[in-house]
Image (cartoon, rainbow, N blue to C red; front, side, top):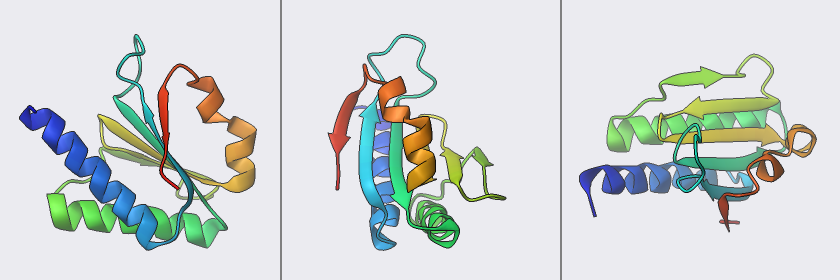
Length: 120
């Protein structure tokens, strides 16, 4: 296992823990590495039940990655509406949706060639 692989695995584990701490729902890990021209290596997708819940989940992820890995997202988008917040960690992009927004955009279908692991 290379250092890069280990650090990505560590990042994924901490992100998943951050989601789990705040009871994020329907967590899925999409492995995009075999898809040509993909934007990153992995997507992590989950749902929250409200604006407050979506904000709390992303806050938990950022706090844990900062504290445990000294890592911060390169870019954050969607915090104003909290319908869909994206945290871009370069190789791993996290999407935290409200359920209705997730159903509307249906990212899992758009990236149907990805290997999808259902976490919870």
